[in-house]
Image 1 (cartoon, rainbow, N blue to C red):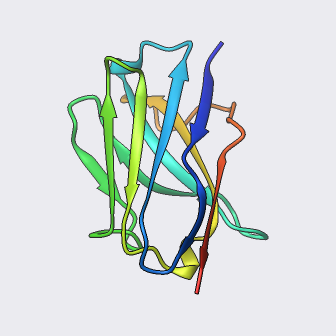
Image 2 (spheres, rainbow, N blue to C red):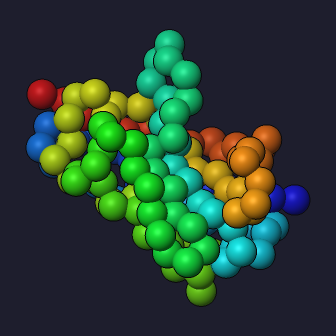
Length: 119
C-alpha cells in the first residue's frame, strides 16, 4: 500500500526559506513522477511542481524561480526547496505520485505538512 510522509513545514517570515521532504513507500519510486501539491484554507488542492523519473521538472507559474523540486531515488524521497517565500505560499503541502503514462495521481494522500508564511 502506498504511503506518503511529508515533513519540513513550519512558520517562516516572508522572504525566508524552507525545505520540505516527502518519503514514499509501497511503490517502485524511481519509476514514478513525483509531485508537490498545496491546499490553502477554502481552496482546492493545486499542483506546485513535479519531477519525472528522468529528472525533468515542471512548475506552477506562481512558484517558478523560487521553488526547486528534486528527488533522491536511493532514499525514496522527493524534496521541495522553497525560497523567497510569500504570504500566499501559506498552505498545507502534500506529495503524490503517478506513473508517467497515467494522467492521474494516486487517490491516497499523506497528512501533509503545514507551511505558514508571516509578514
